[in-house]
Image 1: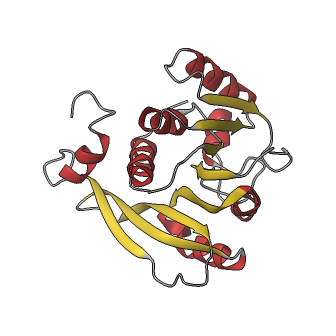
Image 2: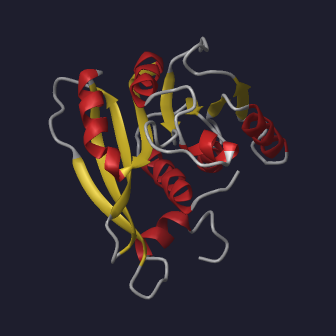
Length: 225
């Protein structure tokens, strides 16, 4: 499976955000782990966290297991083969992260692996948010990476599920492009919450070089930054 730049950006953003939290993060759930990228990036920054990484696709699960065994994080990351909708998790999680399949109602390609990674493959966005709601601790936070085109949809579903967006970051490929991804931080809605922090980031600048914001986030993960 291909590792994308936006997924790397998302993983770095999550790790940095959680470093700023003043409470201890012990239990982490990565829904639809794929290669295990997000779990590894978070484990690199939090050596005490125990991460359950669940994956429904058998081939991706096997790759994640292989990657985990070859990584320095084999003790921290527990790769699970299963359907998050049906799986009975034994604990509540301080942090839940997911880079879910992007598209639910669009034409799919002839590449089955790509279809599984990017299209609906057994879990709808509304179902994903219900899983998050049911497995997040009362003080926990969740992070999602989604296409910008689903920005309004996700807000409506979160409202229905009584989940709150505490921060949202709009992502551009370059300063000349429109937004193409949205990174969301949220939690179980509390009565005193009313405002959402809104930011944006570009991956490339006008000279097709990584922006300073991007380099600052990824410098601990990319060798050439």
